[in-house]
Length: 171
Image (tube, rainbow, N blue to C red; front, side):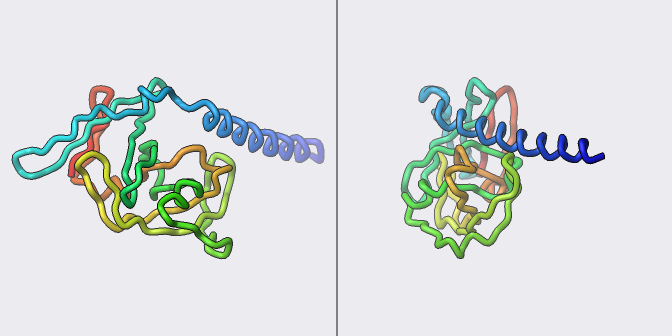
């Protein structure tokens, strides 16, 4: 029984280390710039609704250049993330600098549970789509390889849908 427990502990530590290494590799080898650009198809329908279509990158992820508080920041759309998640360095770029005591939210990630700081983004824009007062979390750069555009943004849209290899966002 003792050997099984030791093996289980070793597998947990090894799995956490492998996830951290994979996260670091993804951060150090970003997808080529051309694949990060959304298909710039913002359009306005007759009902005054705004629409944006994003093409997936070579890994099947949807990446977008998003304006947060007027600054351009790269995001990956993540329907599995409850909130928008920002790396500390990008949060600082838009004026959000949480104190260590602000990291009170516990978040489950691929690297296990980490502490995050709650934030609210006054204005988030993608193409012609604008969403105000978006709840977000700030996470340390070493646990978050890329910013995530989560459901706290997506749920404020009229719809978002995956169709024909594209992600359609409508407001």
